Structure formats: structure tokens, C-alpha cells
Amino acid sequence: MSRLEGRNNSTLRKTKIQPGVQEFAEGSALIQTGKTSVLCTATIENGVPRFLRNSGQGWLTAEYSMLPRSTSTRTPRESKLGKIQGRTSEIQRLIGRSLRQIIDLTIIGEKTITLDCDVIQADGGTRTASITGAYVALYEAIFKQIKSKTLVQNPLKNAIAATSVGIINHEIIVDLNYQEDSNADVDFNIVMNDNFEFVEIQGTAEKAAFSKSELDTMLEKSSEVINQLFIIQKDAINQIQN
Image (tube, rainbow, N blue to C red; front, side, top):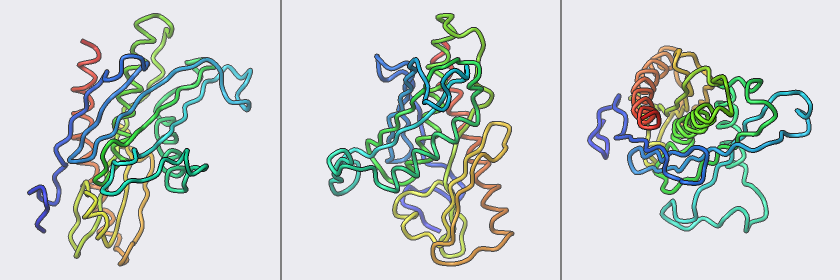
């Protein structure tokens, strides 16, 4: 099918990750994929939620938000609305769950890591971009802790990244932009670690059911795209280390 960016069905959007974009955060990264841009920051603070007090174990959580003009019309700030919307709550839980899978929280002690993912511009794939960028922000925060000898052991077990995949007019395409996502017959979000193990699969038949063979192809194509994201993450990590 013809895609707006001139991509073929299996091609990732042009993606780059710039680490260290916020001076005061323990870790930060700006991820840009196509027209979607997300600022990810990592904050490490002493203390844990009540259910973990005196356990010796840390915690990792995430917050997600879209800036008012990240889309074609202004979206009111949720703080003004007085409550977090269901979509926001679901996405930030996904980000937190995903990143907790790749860190040993017993190593960091009773500290809380908060990953803030703020969407500057949205053109589809904001949740998957948030996971991919948040990993780089988390890596920078941990790297600084080890470098300063605040941590003596690296708690990170794997890298993690995510992408979208879907079916439009019986064609399987990866890394959907907003227009494609809005018109997809089937829509999936795939999260994987760098052992190519699945961390989370979110998928639904929006307009038409899908077969097992189509599912297998979607998982295969998304794995190929996520492998490319791991390479982009490594380039960003090299900047942190150097």
C-alpha cells in the first residue's frame, strides 16, 4: 500500500533518540519517530510506596501526558480537568509495567524511579515511543548512579523497546502513524526485550478479525522493527557512555 512517508509496509519511520536533553534530570531522552516526539525523563528519589517500606526493594513507576497542542486541536490539561483520563492511566501503567520487567529493583534499595513521558507532538505510536525513549532515560540515570558510586551494581537486566503493527485492507504494516492507526482493521502494540522475548502484546480487531498466520506475521515483522530500535538505542547509549 502507499504510505504518506513513502515507506514500504515493513519500514520503521525515521527515528532518532537524543539523550541528556534535560540538565537537572538524572536521566533524559528525546525520541522522535516520524512526526511523533516524546520527552522522557528519569527521576530517582529516596523512599518507596507504603507496600514496599522496610522491604529493602525499590520501585519504578511512570507518568504519561500529552501537551495541549501535541495534536491538531488543543487538549485541556488533565490537571485542569481534575482527574486522569482512562487512556492516560492505561498508557502509564503499560510504560511502568514494561520497564519494571528489565530492572532488578532489589539492587537499588528503597528508592523510587519515576519515568515521565511527555508527548510534545503526536502522530501515532506515542505509547511505544515512550517505552523506547524511557529506556534510554533510565539507562542514563543508572549510568550516573554507578559512575558516582551511588550504585555498585547495575540493576538493568535487558534493553526494552516497542512498536506498533496493524492490518489495513488485508496488508500488514509496521509502525503506524495516526492516519494509519485510525483506519486500521487490526491494531497491535508490541513490547520486547533484547532477548527478543515478548514483554507485552496489546492487540485488537478494530474492524475485522485476523488469522493466526496474520498474527504470526505481525509478530515477526514487529520483531524486525524492534531490532532496529535496539540499534538506535545503542547509538544513544554510546553518547551517554562517552
